[in-house]
Image (tube, rainbow, N blue to C red; front, side, top):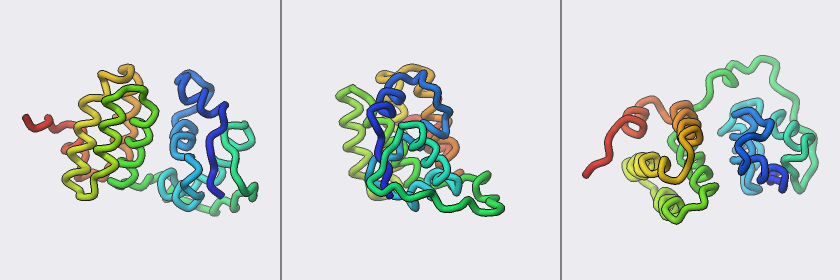
Length: 167
């Protein structure tokens, strides 16, 4: 199953004031019709199938195959300790840039999408974060930075979130 956003979901993401919590917004952003439940679970945690099922029941997502979500694991300590991954941070920021209606966002999206090496990815993430305030509200930028702080590997936090861009 590869969940896809409905018109209601697109409207909710644009509004920024929809009755969605941060986890639900993240899930909606990542549900692009290309990612399956396995990939969503890797990005969102072990409770992703239940979260996707809830968003489907609420009318925010639809899927080609309407299979019931697998049963939740008995004890999932991994759900509380989220995975950190440069790939997850890259995908998240690509999705955030795709939501922006600004020519610079499209350029940054292409730049980040083309990165393959770790150093290039870190530079593109820093560049996008430096230019995001010109395209979005302060609250939006802060939410993006908070999410990146959660998903970036700890060894890259300072390099992406605190390091100044080279001249």
